[in-house]
Length: 179
Image 1 (spheres, rainbow, N blue to C red):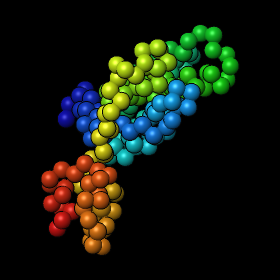
Image 2: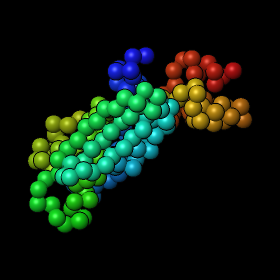
Image 3: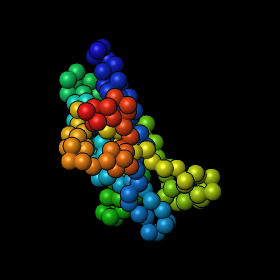
């Protein structure tokens, strides 16, 4: 694999494997759901580890950076957003940093999610956003801890249908589970 394209190829694979990110946090002010940064990282961690990608999100000056570094090739890609001037209240500043961490990471990986709270906050409303999109279930990978658990679950006499309700399962993986 070419050193220059290694990080990008891995980012592509991560994006392909994660599908649409699930929104599990509630915004009571706008009565909408969103994915928070901790949930996003929790969903990404197994794939970052699998593809040997290090995630770093420092702030420098008035910028929030997101770095993805391939630990094998030492290649890096990054994105950043500038924090607006005038934010001095620590709570508002912390919220802005968290928001920018979430969106630089999602943008860098090209992750799919409907942004309900940002659309409402900007006055665009939900009528232009399809809120009936169901997020893709995570893909069950044959070399993952989830696969080992699923294999044990089936060996104990349980149904693969229960696993399919939580995961997308490719034909090859389903055949391995049923062996």
